[in-house]
Image 1 (cartoon, rainbow, N blue to C red):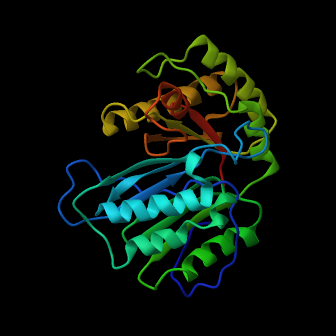
Image 2 (spheres, rainbow, N blue to C red):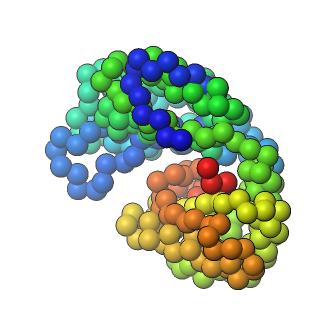
Image 3 (cartoon, rainbow, N blue to C red):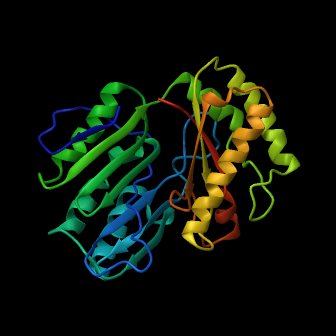
Length: 283
């Protein structure tokens, strides 16, 4: 369940491999748009080969000045190690609340490394937590710890969810592999269909439980086009799975476009990893 609260909240949780992210302001933003910053980590749940100690941490977003950028990147390197941080932050004409850089630095704590498939979005005074944690107490404590490090003008939306054995089943079936499509399209390749055949078997073992299929792209091209492509690919995956006997009502789809990278978009290998399909057990 989503939870909206401010600093005085007394809830309690802890995190397990996180993606801290604040959404980029849209291109052509108006003067006065709020500052934003993004820290993204790949999934590190059981069954995936990504190692939490070596996976890249990608920082992106739009900040008001070079000093703010340097402060945030410096904190990231302190917590995660300099060799793991990929700096994609940009300086632009945005407005930050008082001591915004200091508060973002406080959010970059070792606790964030405990969130799996996580995302912390910071846009001005608005914060949104996403990802998986081990239990309900952790779900509440992580957000509570975050809130107590901020002043009451910051609002936190807690969308952390408790991970499950069933999510682990999906993770092991996917095994960090990429569902392949023909370039620039939502047409599955034979290799992509073969992987979805395995995913259909895993879904069949979940009984009637619902899942969400999430499409992702790299950052090349227009964001709007990438959002549309990621949604079309998620829909194509659903259609294929329905054709394999999975009930349509069990599968929700969404397209995240380029907004949740798990690797740098500066290399072909990174862009390939970012073009992916994820399967999440629906709450």
